[in-house]
Length: 148
Length: 148
Length: 148
Length: 148
Image 1 (cartoon, rainbow over the protein chains, first blue to last red):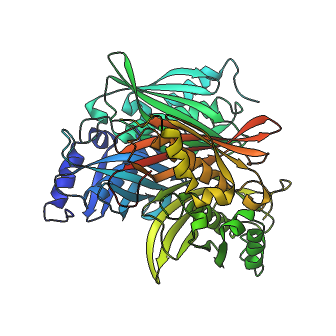
Image 2: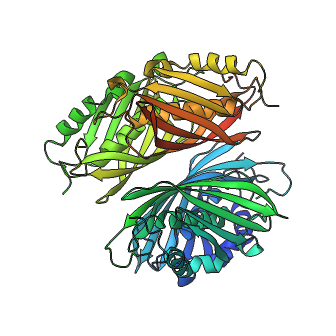
């Protein structure tokens, strides 16, 4: 039974708040919907690579998180989600004011869910696609320490 | 001509120091050799995911950086490196005292270099493999803003 | 200058006809458009894996080919295309009458193009998504033996 | 309990023989050991791409199969294996007399196994690495139609 219940938004945000990395990077949840989660990250020198662009690792971090929570929205309320693997293509330098990672479920399964995240850089209100992530997520139930 | 000259170590460390993300995460360069770079990251709540493990994004960030610099060590001294894409398998929860990302070049080419990073978690001196990253790196020469 | 000229369709089909593997598998080109190529494969025991489904390798073969030709449609008429890497998620067993691989360009660049292929299995006219491939393609010009 | 019993070799070869695609391509099993399987493919025009090299899809097919059977060697005797996803880097044109895919298990788990395959082209007895595949394999037990 998917968890597109009234508490979905609260559960995802509560879980997100526990992610120390997201706070450290300055990332925030923008939107939660069944099968789709968007995360935003303000570009800043503290998340840069050597040429001043946003680091591929920071881009991957929010893209993976968006993909994982998108998957979690369609899992049972008591389940946790773990990333089995992901692949990301960096298609353009990530520069701009804000980086948006839009994760959505491509295929939801009992054990394995495939999610995809499109990452765009927003400069003066204009969007440019900078990365594409595809991830394999695993639904974990009844394992101590792995929930939501 | 690979850049395994006397200035190699200094150039890589200087470039690494410009990566705001590595400082923000608390990552450090452990070793630089021709075709191989190792990066360390101390586990802490500030880089965690929701279950308390080190976030896959933080693991990917140092693994990508190690893979990129490993590639750069075999490129001309004036070249810069960009990540075209990477794929990472998270094989075990990243928990321990320190996370080590050991990047090495698998195939060095004029334009494209393939690198691989093994990520291990060190707990009380014992190592456990937690992730495997394979990356496609691109050698950039003569493009404004992209060097070292 | 993209090669969406009048000869585009003929050039792609001529190149496809040189692919011994496509003939061996029984694959055919269904559609060629600027930035998009579709390839079809009739399911049969000669391309099966051990459980009787179409082999992941056969699925990947047509998906890679569709992605590569989709990229080639946007390259100069004299260019050749090589697959740098691809990643494929097998989301459901590939069983049915026909397997369709719909490749399209996600991001076209001078050297690197990113393509994505959705693979569907068609059974009694009904489609089911069975795989998703993301590929990094390289434009090759002026290298002996690599054209179209 | 891993299936490194006396029947291991026979079970893998029996399963391989059911793969129509491997016969169609002309692939053969060279070696079976616990955690490692090698498959060979004779280069020929019937498995070529448009420039005359062995098609990336044929390379991926034997690499995926080697990775899958390497995983299966460490699974219970009654289990079946399915490829969840794989990623392959094509590092050099696959040309030569024979293509060898050497699969080995990187991390064996109850549900998920990560395998890696190195693909080499053999020309006049000399080997050259042409591709690297990393795959996520899933252990299937008790599902009708999915065994060995």
